[in-house]
Image (cartoon, rainbow, N blue to C red; front, side):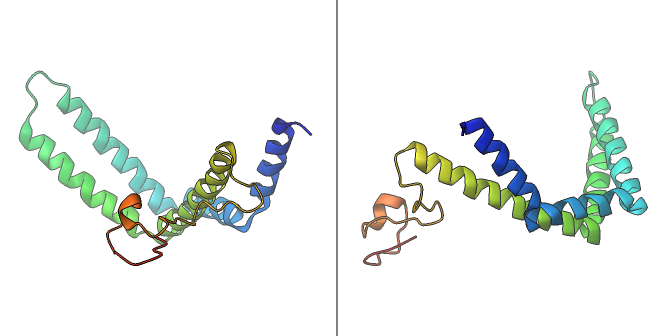
Length: 142
């Protein structure tokens, strides 16, 4: 089986994973959330206004500061939205999964055993200075 075909099979498996399904559900909830969508539209308008002002030959610093403060306020409202929080958690789970999978692939490309390599296992072999850890513990596994 070709590497491309195996990759496509992995893609299918990822799309069946509970983390992927949770992210899709969170995306759908965000799309249906009218209040969240209004906030997203508002924040985009603030960004456009800020960029327009910033592109002027002599931008009004007061306006730019006001846009920045308004942006922060709307952003805070967006991030307090339950659907957005659920999406952010689901997106982090997918990001973690993809980082783990690409870590395995990178280790395999570097010659590690595909059956046993683990990108989450980090060992400095007892010399904590070699991995940047300064705990000084014998046999450190940070």
